Image 1 (cartoon, rainbow, N blue to C red):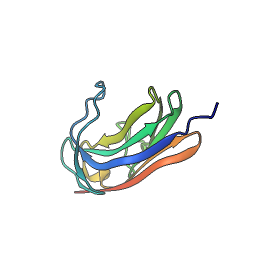
Image 2 (image 1 turned 30 degrees about the vertical axis):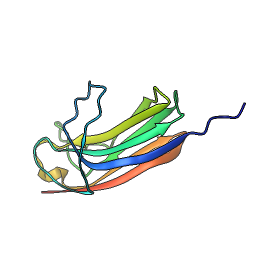
Image 3 (image 1 turned 45 degrees about the vertical axis):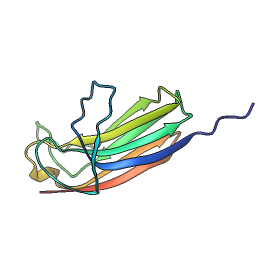
Length: 128
């Protein structure tokens, strides 16, 4: 039997409605853009649509401007993994900003890999 072809698409990116992380619902796209003005509770990122990859592991990274954590240490890029739980899957990778806003301005690079292959990348610029 032929192996099913996996397909993926960077479906949307930019500004989204507030995302409830515990919800199964993804945030709604508000505006497609790579230039984002920082304001309280702004949600930004991208959505990937993936077909035929149930059980595969996605590895993601959010590389952000240099800022310090609450202990004064430089915060490392945010990394994680998630498993595709259906053959028609949508994945949101994104973040929001918090005070102080000044150190969150700059380039935010969002990346997602499957089977060591980069399947999505988007650079978003946050400005005050």
